[in-house]
Amino acid sequence: MPPRANSPAARDAAFALHPYTEHKAHRETGSLIIERGQGVRVWDESGKEYIEAVAGLWCASLGFSNERLREAADRQMRKLPFYHAFGAKAHEPMIELSEMLVQRAPVPMARAFLANSGSEANDSAVKMVWYYNNAIGRPQKKKIISRLRAYHGVTVASASLTGLPANHKLFDLPIAGIFHVSAPHHYHGAEPGESEEAFASRLADEIEALILREGPDTVAAMWAEPIMGAGGVVVPPRTYFEKVQAVLRKYDVLLVADEVICGFGRTGAYWGSQSLGMEPDILTCAKALSSSFLPISGVLVNERIFEGLAEGSSQIGTWGHGFTYSGHPVSAAVAVETLKIYDEMDVAGHSRQVGAHLQNELRRRFADHPLIGEIRGMGLIAAVEMVEDKATHRNFDPARKLGARLAKLCEAHGVIVRGLANDAVAFSPPLIITESEVDEMLERFGAALEAFTVELRRESLS
Ligand code: PMP
Image 1 (tube, rainbow, N blue to C red):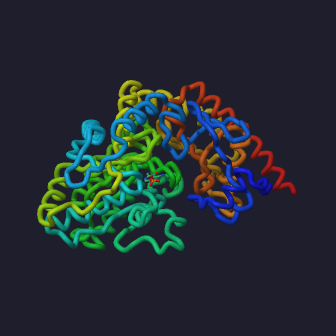
Image 2: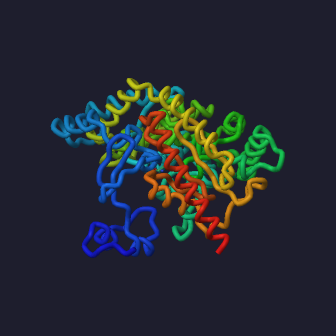
Image 3: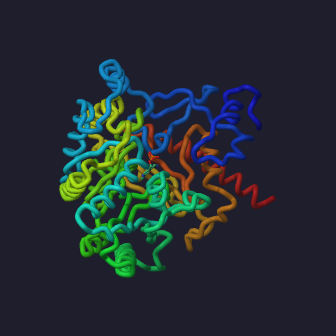
């Protein structure tokens, strides 16, 4: 139904150019307009209540209300609403946040650089890798390995690292020098009968073959999310990172962990790197860093990278990179308070416990459902994928857009999930969610799935 004239929906359709939206369809259908939030729930303009099963965009880790974060922002707004960090200027919130991030890193890290989004963090890290290799006299070592189905952002370099068609087609991306290897998804990628370990070995061999084909002295780094998020909540097969890292070390290729979704407890450890056995040289984070109450992101670099950056900047006279809002004091103050809350609530322990409940309940309730092919995830991140043929793992015709339709139907049943490729829907609720709220979320999802099953049966009869 087209939106009413002059309603918020009509004004939205008339004036807002939305991120990640099909513009022509949006002109007709308008948006779901969210008005307020409390805990794990949000309410739309008509007063309808939803459980936010993806924490917005996998990010509002402390939910949609928090007095301490509001007060931290208010205090900092009154004291010093803005100052920058260029040319060796600093202020307490950015110092405290940098210190806290370095102290909490999954492997020894030397410095934290602050930016405003996951995309900016990854673009910054790409430039650090290039700068580092120039500074230490390896100007030819610049190529980067990423993976199909990866998500690293939408700015020019980070979108190039992303391995999803919609981020490349019509944008003239990826840029040169970025190579995508196979996604580590056993359910779809393994040969019949191939074990997780054997699949992991094959994927590591693929990376080694790529490095040898391009020349080890030209390959600088590999990017990886511990668990792929937007590409489908792909948990890599057992032994994957162990084998991949052995290859990377052999050819002196850096590992960059994109912890934008997995960082700060999502996987049941403080960092996804710890859950998956990654030892990155560089780590990017964002989203839950401030519980998304204000935009902020970080790049952690180890001593070796920092020394290279320091060497280069002494040659040039400065390190020519940084954003007006790098370390913005209000965002940084909110992030500091967020990290203090994580410590107090033991965010990883809570996520491990409630996450185990989520993973068990998803499987108990839906594993035998005729539409559900795979249920995957770890901690408080999960996906269920619908398939046409459970034996061969064959998906439905993508033109039928079943995942997107199920996600829409979930909204009608009072739960917001995220539709992903291959008819998967994602769960990544606020990390404060309780077991009983998980149950309520899955009740609503189950009701939507039942209604969808009936709808599909009717379609196949008509
Ligand atoms: N990396 C990962 C793993 C992400 O999930 C995202 C966002 N979904 C990004 C990077 C980009 O972050 P942003 O949207 O803040 O630029």
